[in-house]
Image 1 (spheres, helix red, strand yellow):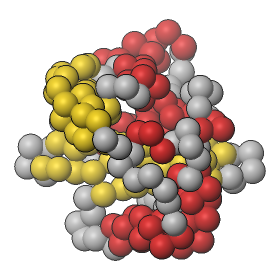
Image 2 (cartoon, rainbow, N blue to C red; image 1 turned 180 degrees about the vertical axis):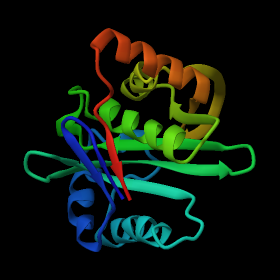
Image 3 (cartoon, rainbow, N blue to C red; image 1 turned 180 degrees about the horizontal axis):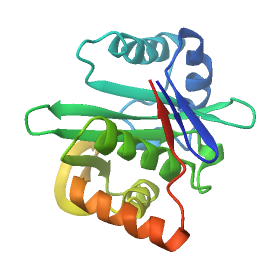
Length: 197
């Protein structure tokens, strides 16, 4: 699967991607939002292997794609959707980005493409995401996507010796389609996202 946005190409992972993933997951700016305190080659190879294994699932329920720059193919993160309940047509999304590329709209652009995949291609009704409350950048991305804050769970997780609150955001298919239509009317064009399997 390939998902193309205006600046990004989201593609399937391959085994060699672990080196770039290790580079950005070892960044001290990245680490505060995760349980681990350090990353190793072994950990990251297993992390990437999860994505490789999900590519073989039938029916496939997990689509975690490498985020790469169209200009040079550099892998700068990953973004994906996981179908939680096929009968209720519910899924969740998640993403992470190399800190060198924070604040440039790449996470929002990639996640917008993943939402389009979820609603248009996979036929989801509800898509949600969790983030820890102190990760303001991630909450901003979810709000830019048009997702609603549905819940704040107090001290939901324990990360690096402290309890942290968790935020749940969600968007329904009709909300996304309405937002997408309004965006098209304002710009006079579509989102510019191409999906190929």
